[in-house]
Amino acid sequence: MTPGSAPLTEGDLDAALWRVLAASGRDDGDAFRAALDGIEGSLAAAGEPRWAAWRAALGARRDLLDGDRDAAAVGVADARDALGASPPSACTALVLAYLAHLEATADHLDAAMLLAVDASLLTEQLTPPDAAGEPSPALHQAHLWLSLTLTALDLEELAVAQAERGYAVAARLDDPHDRWQLLRLCAQQNTELAQTVRRRGQAGRARELAAAALTAAAGARALDVEPHPDDLDLLDVVQAWALACHDDLDDALGPLRAVHRRVHRDGSTWLRGYADLALSRLLTRLSQEHSGGGGGEEAADLLVDAAGAFAATADRRRYRQCLLELGQATAAMGRPAEALYWLDAYRADTSRAHARSRELWAEMFVRRSRLREVERQAAVLRRHALEDPLTGLGNRRSAERRLAGLRLGTEPLSLAVVDVDRFKEVNDDASHSDGDEVLRRVAALLREHSRAGDEVYRWAGDEFLVVLPTATQAQALAAVERLRAAVAEADWGDLPLTEPVTVSIGVATAPAVADERAAPVGWRSLFDTADLHLFSAKRSGRNRVRAPGLVDGAPAGEPRGETSGETPGDAPAGGTA
Image 1 (spheres, rainbow, N blue to C red):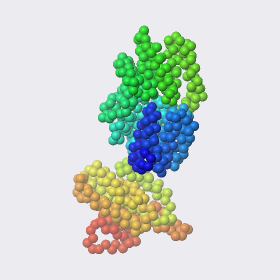
Image 2: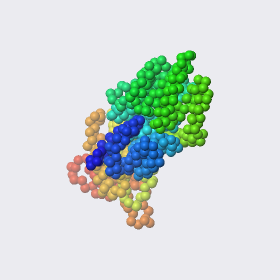
Image 3: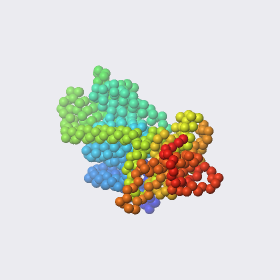
Image 4: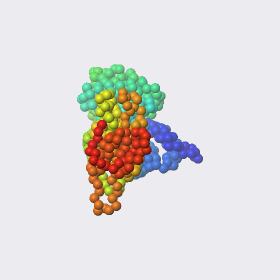
């Protein structure tokens, strides 16, 4: 944004934020600064706490690029304070994940792990295992930054899982660039994990992970998008490296050398280091598997170059990996003094306490994630216990629990018992599946046309209960007449029914009790009264509403659907079809 220009709109600011984040994910400090400069004025003018958090977080990223870690730490703290005023959302999860990545970049691994745990728990709430959560760019970006952070924390299994969850969200978005970005990340994370498990001796699992990486890479290439040249080069490096992890060493060498040359001509510093590392590992494998094949010296030289590139771009994890692999490679070549030099440098950068701290936080991350899964399963069980599976309404157990918690007498309360007229004939003349559809539609109509704050439950069979808090009898009658009319006027023509569906409704009201010493009516008595008047509505011709204490003053010839009341007689409680 240029001086004097108008602040960006909310939608424009969101779009600009994605561009800044894309630049932040690449090793191009100038591009990031330019993108941030373009929206900084609008971020300052935006009043929502989330924009204040982004202003502080992106400023911290710029401070890291400038080498000012103290200022970056202040920015991270300011961003967290701003998030305290924001409700939990996908945007909140994204800011937390981005801050976690900043802390990992600054080598503050304990702080990064805490932020990653918080971001992960929030994304799990927003992205259930059945992918029923609402997809959004913020949610898939949160998974992306979490995946990158977990890689920096040496939690590669979790990094792969986050990348795959991110793709599940991106796959449901309209923008193919979102899918491309997450497919490329899935390919990269699976390839790096394949490298790790191969080093542990798990060759079979390494091939499986490499195959998954190759599938993801092919999926990305099949999309009709034009990614940034650096991103496309990174995918080329990853795909060739995945071939190597799949044991297709000879097939991998040519493509990897080709992209290595191109990256060293046009690529960023970090990408050159990444290509050096991948080619070094491939040459090491070839040297080990082809006796006398050479390649060890070139591999060591590439590792030296990669270590320099990662040190320059603050990728401390990969810098340490290069130091360790240089020590191992030079030892294997019979150069112990040089090996000791690299291993001493590795130890200096990785203290025992540092490694133990990372291990403890990793254990906490896994435990908290498992706890969240237990809580999720418990919530599912609670929902199944209290929800009617056919209609999605609360069931009788849920209704009784709600009614038992009401304090009758402090303010008016009305109950309406709703019964589908001649429902047995629907099942007999059509089918039980049609009967089920009738119940689903009646439930939907009751829910749709109820007042805000009213609650609808499926009580039993074709009987429903509507709880109308604070409703006087007159208000309840008006509300339930709207429900009756909604069912009667609905279009039932697509079902093989002999006549349209209607409902009969009985209403009872417990008024507010002026004298607090007076005993209020209990909910069971109130329900029995409503049920009694449901029976009266059935007996009077169905498709009508009845309540106690009113004179049936409907004019002669009034069609079905009248709202009336009566003085209760001796009619038995209970509904009839």
